[in-house]
Length: 235
Image (tube, rainbow, N blue to C red; front, top):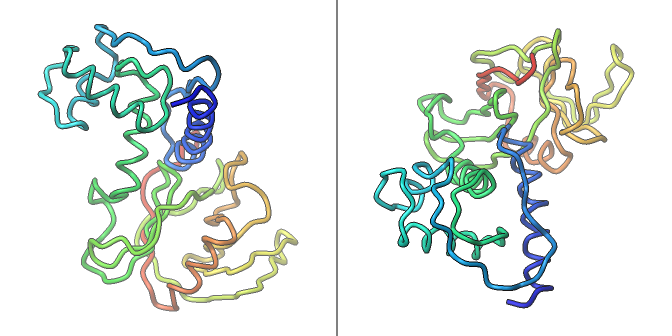
């Protein structure tokens, strides 16, 4: 791979991880190198802080100690995903990429959102993500969301959508709430014009990107289930 190709791949990964890690609330620092040359780096013998996690993810024997075979497997993953330097070190960037991949595969791997209620819109406050599932099958998402700030927490528990307003206007906050679907008092899924990653958060609603809110609008109806759990970091 040329230096320019590696730079572009690493830059793309940095952008992608910045989005996904913000969405799922991962705390691992993001330090993907996007500069430098394409010189081949030696495979490291160092054991990384996420050695066991990475070994398990890659299906390697889990002993927490770096081996030559471990390094080759980790390095292969890093090269495939544009992580630089690709020296086979089980560091925070590699583990963060693997966590993000796991979340995309199965956001409800922990089994916290009900699977016996038919269609459910799940909201994980801890990771700041939401998705729609039918039983155990994820039908849309996960997508990043912005929930209630400190003092305006999005309330947890089992809810149901009871009112929908595609072009809603909040008289309380004097702001548009497109594709609003209310599920608990004044709390609703709805689109926002700004970034869902901007602090400090909403006044209790589940803020979404326009495309995601529009998709929720098409997939959910009055009476459909909503389940909110976890706790937003910093609240």
